[in-house]
Amino acid sequence: MAVMNENYCNLKESYLFSQIAAKVAAFVANNPDKKVIRMGIGDVTLPLAPAVVDAMKKAVEEMGVKETFRGYGPEQGYDFLHEALVRYYKEHGVELATDEIFISDGAKSDCGNITDIFNNANTILVPDPVYPVYVDTNIMCGRNIVYINGTPENNFLPMPDDSIKADVVYLCSPNNPTGAAYTKEQLEAWVAYALKNDAVILYDAAYESFVVDPAIPRSIYVVEGAKECAIELCSLSKTAGFTGTRCGYTVVPKALKRKAGNGQEMSLNKMWLRRQTTKFNGVPYIIQRGAEAVFSEQGQKECQEMLEFYRENAKIMMNTLTKKGIKFYGGVHSPYIWLQCPNGMGSWEFFDYLLEKLAIVGTPGAGFGKMGEGYLRLTAFGSREGTIEAMERIEKNL
Image (cartoon, rainbow, N blue to C red; front, side, top):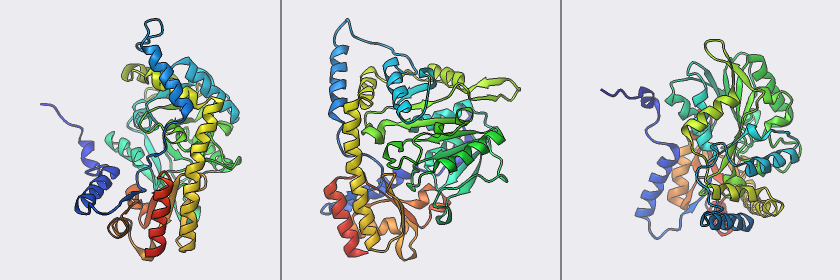
């Protein structure tokens, strides 16, 4: 008899965004005349940059010619994309070797898959509120999870606590869902904690391209010692609109080593390479050529124009919430606005109110953890027209 993984019994019945989609679908079915403005799931709305499209077109043509056709590529990604990323990191003050970078189909996949190289006996430290994937993937493995609270008092940027002993630490900056971003000094404290406790930091930098303040790190590797304790995961989904195109990358420094249960010293870089070559066949050549174009001079110019569009949406949202006296976080170095539900409403209560009364879709903060109760996340990834109309509805009806 096949025996199932009983840890799945400890998961919530459905993934947060699946639950939201079901509620929205029911509302739309019952109210076909109402225009629903979706500001919940963080999907982009602008098309791919012209430089990216041109590169992908050229790559498609190459695949149609015998001399330039490509079959299986290297599981860790083509050299041309590695080299583009090495240059990109160097521009932001970080030196990397090409074989420390692994190309993937997105940060979400790698956030889940990276757990393969860790023993299930590890204690996992997760900030709350948090991106649900961090928690759910470790519940699936039956690991012990401890939480450190993000609160208004610490600006939703929890700091290390020496009374908590953890082996793996999840950090996300700029943060999803709160939009808060760690300073270099704060990240130095986390690196010191990891080195002291022989822990590994899994650093989600998916929103690094939204950072506008040079004092806010774009990578944890600007901190001395981080290469000895941190894995960095990043994505082109928000940087360049690759949500449907799927491409990301994970950095595993060669200096990062830890011991196995039998005491043998292990290179996490070699472990991840072994995992990827076994379980992953790589990102398509066409996609990687598009990703390479993202990091070209023209690609960066066009992608920054897209990011500026979303930043302007965030400003429109922040102006309205400020005018209404609604407390919020984020929006400056992030596409997310983390707002306090008005009139003492609960997260799902306010979600239902916005949907049913204003036909606006947000994301209830309670779906991101216990500390998210009483908050709601809105995204700046909508159209300009939709963003303005949503804020007009909020201004008139809240």
